[in-house]
Image (cartoon, rainbow, N blue to C red; front, top):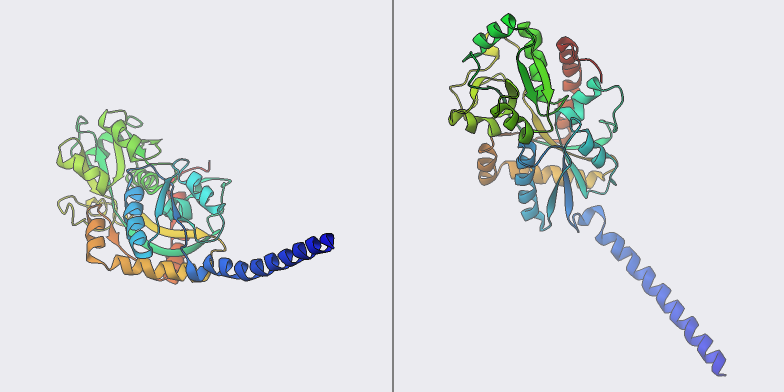
Length: 333
């Protein structure tokens, strides 16, 4: 009798456990589903060093989204290999909305034309929203015997191979800008890639390299302090932050127009509901005067737009960039 009672109790307990599990499982699944995203911290992978323009813009965005959703948006810096290390890490993450990538021209467009084999598929991402654009500024060491772009070009032609320029990585906008200038001006200057501004700026300040296409945010303070010279802006219009600095285009190189952009993407398979939710939140944030003011201090121009706008921008940039890379003479690595 006792044995039957024990078996009965065990059977009843097992039935109750199964019933509870069946009731709890759907609610757990529902709590973690797209409609309840985010229910835990979100990781934003930044494929450049801490302190870079990409990093600072990502942190501003992460703080803004964190306030809206009541969850932490954690910045994870994965610099190196022309943004490929960070891009690969994000591409391999689950498409659940809890890993995002702050992408740019290198990761989404340029790398496909510079490398025979990529460690990730640039098309294996869901486009979410373009956050901002920012111009690059061509900087030079003040000890060099030129004070403007025309004098630099003349010096470079008289001294082929003597000048060098840094970039924040092969395949980045700073690299392509340098190669474009070489091709358009007909000069021979040596490219020296670094992992980011954290390495390139000290190299320029110490005279290890002659020039550097840097973002206006990190480069302009050195110009204002008299530690570096500004030879021109890389985009097709002057920056409100430094209207006295002419563009390279207006100094005799029409069509010279390269400006880094920053856009949030997610691993392939991220639910459309989460992508749409994020797009709405980012566009809302970009309209907030306080957030726009914070972006302005970095030299960035807020953009935003729909998911379709982001896709169209990248689709248009791919053939344009392919042409620029071929004109620059850069060889596949």
